[in-house]
Image 1 (cartoon, helix red, strand yellow):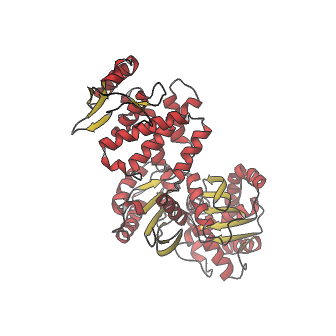
Image 2: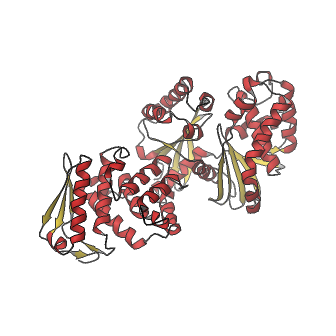
Length: 503
């Protein structure tokens, strides 16, 4: 991957950002940066709908980014969306337009996944990440908190408070006074109560803030002589007095205050002040590393086959006490069938092959809850658990595969988005049926062929002859597929069964 270019796009609640990085060995060097002040969260109505203006600003920014990214391969770009698009009811319609404008898929990530990626970016920008550090990032709609050591997070949390949302709520029309400032700070302190105790128990060596609000506050403090070498409690007290004295964001004349940051400074300041108070921080350092840099390093890890999603799948298998041998059997058979029907899946990095692999590993995690309807429990866990490395769309797809691996297909008719999903479902269902006895025996001659409409599955007559359960399950399988309008025909041939590992 030496000298390859990769890119990350961050659809934040305040700004959209693009970073292009040059890969040299295991390091990434920034080659280009673009930033657009979209203020997406400001366009979120009380009933959680994005207004036309904020959507237009976002699409305009993404068209610019799309021009810069022309010529990049899909595997070299990762775009992530954060809090506002996590909560907006019309996020899906906006994202469809956004992906067309950008030219690449966009993942909506969970708050804790955002925190993990932020920490990864900050850790790679620290001179010595081996210390234990408290990292926090004040975004437009949420603030993420992480304690980590080296490149590994220890605790992660995302709270629903951000510079845009707090500025709109507590400083309407830009008005600032002592009462509104203290109300905003107290609101942030109430949010922080949920995490302060456990974070203090874990402990940290020093505190680091990242991203736009922290950078703006640091520059204002230093350029106006309020503090030297970092964000300090004393400097924040002086800045609070200056904000209240001005009385309105339009009357602020602070050195270093950019026009795009001016409307959201009061909300960002209130959160920063509350964090310093809640965690008793006399000094906070700043890091240029942030979400977009973390996305780049996570993308680099995927290229180098150190994918966080693989680690998460393995961790879930341990946590939910999955029968590892059965998971391996099902995964191997399902991927073999997929390769036959879709030659692109012969590539170990093919994304559909990888999803089928994760689904094969995790389809039985619901057994840890109950055997009855365990596939529904599996789907619920995969849809709702914090799964580092997986986006919300990733988790939805995994949950759909887990739900569909047994039982009635009609329940997932509306969930399977395209033909590839149906193919993965078929491969997984067949693998589960063929390994119902949880042994290592495979069919010689087992084959899956995709037709213009439907599929043909080649089976072994000798294998089926003394397996009435498998035969009955396959007959029911054909009926299930017919009910959803996908014909699956089983062709029985004379071959002999072989065991895994036989020559």
